[in-house]
Image 1 (tube, rainbow, N blue to C red):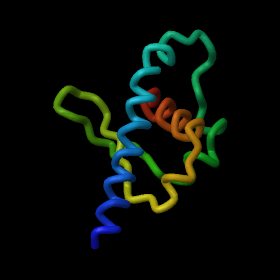
Image 2: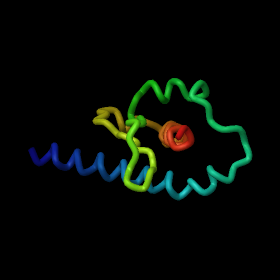
Image 3: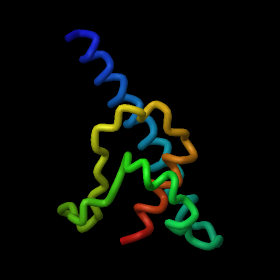
Length: 92
């Protein structure tokens, strides 16, 4: 039970750290003049389904991104994580 709790805490910590990294670079992403990221460009990353849009919106109107339980989360590269979140935040 204690091992499970530590693993759960480590997974949450890793997710929070990756989210911090993405939010720090949002300004840079939004200011890029390059063409937007297309789903076809990152199909293998999207097929992993470690994050997706629920279709709902928060109180402030922002889209809700869902992070379901994903046992191999630690194996996702920073680039994959960044690409998927960049794409999901650009869709709405």
